Image 1 (cartoon, one colour):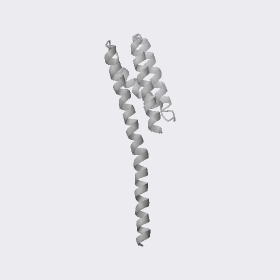
Image 2 (cartoon, one colour):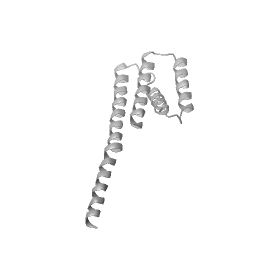
Image 3 (cartoon, one colour):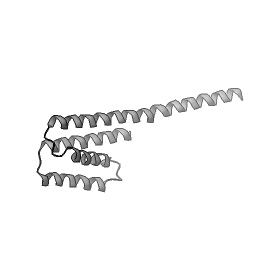
Image 4 (cartoon, one colour):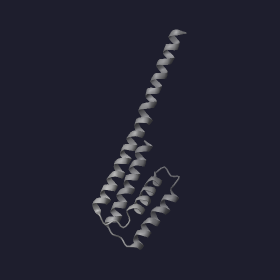
Length: 118
């Protein structure tokens, strides 16, 4: 379930960037928000709350989208980021849950065949 937590954390960071851009904060206010997020990210890097995913999403997207006046482009980038994270979480769940079960089943079948033969 870590993949879901990371994806949700990144989505929250992305939504916060969109909100920050829509508010048209001053440079000082934006710098303050970025500093607070950076401090929280660094301070909580070893926590189990996936703060690092949130912080890096916020910091990277803020750098990428700061000063953009085209709100449609901001929303498009945010939706791409969110959909990429959801797809990534689904792929991680697929490989983390389904593939190991298939491998365990194959191993059991192999052991059963060996027991029958030997």
